[in-house]
Amino acid sequence: MLCTLAVWPAMAKKINNSFVTIETSMGSITVEVYADVTKHAENFLKLAKEGFYDSLLFHRVIPGFMIQGGDPDSKRALDGQMLGNGDIGYKIPAEFMLPKYYHKKGALAAARDNNPQMASSGCQFYLVVGRVFSDSELDMMESRTGTKYTPEARQAYRSVGGTPHLDGSYTVFGQVVKGLEVVDAIGNAPRNASDRPVENIRILRVTVKKKP
Image (cartoon, rainbow, N blue to C red; front, side, top):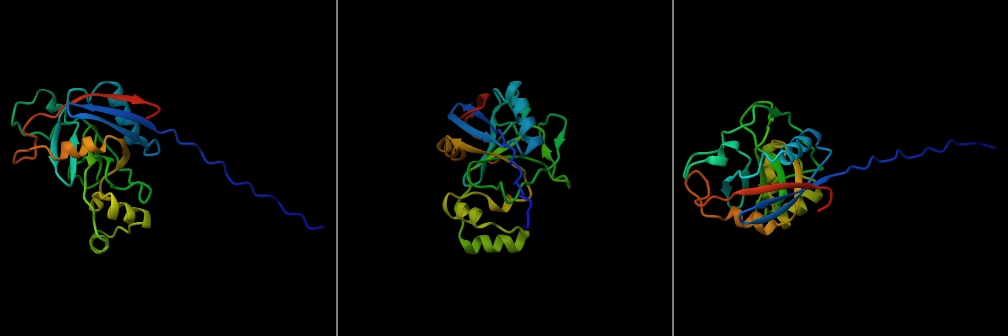
């Protein structure tokens, strides 16, 4: 009798994502933070638990693109002051997780400067507002950037929208699960020539929890 060895599939390791609620002066946003984007998730949650983000501003908002916060200089910024260069003294190595995580509407991603390693700011982040793209536009972006969009990503970019040209250049490490209407409202707020909201939009507090 011929015997065969049974091959048992490896047990998949359960990933326990965390959730944060970003309470702002315009409403609350709940974000799922991806535990498998390890360095970015751990850093963001650490800063949130320490209260680092409390009282900071969304200092840069662009309709159809994104809203950005996390500049420590924004806590006591003067009206009209240029913001965006504040940092925490360190960067985080890039953790691109394509095709799993991409810049669909509501994505949480790390801001960065033009450093050649594409390392992320240790504290500044953005939430994607984005817009809807056609297949021909996505084809053009694939040709220009060399990034190949999966069928899932294409469907998301054609339906809910996003910022596909940022894929592979900025680290995505979370996704809004509640409060997209607040993200849109912040993104559409009146702004000055530097894209800073005319009236301050403040992060009141960021609370970490295990469930949304």
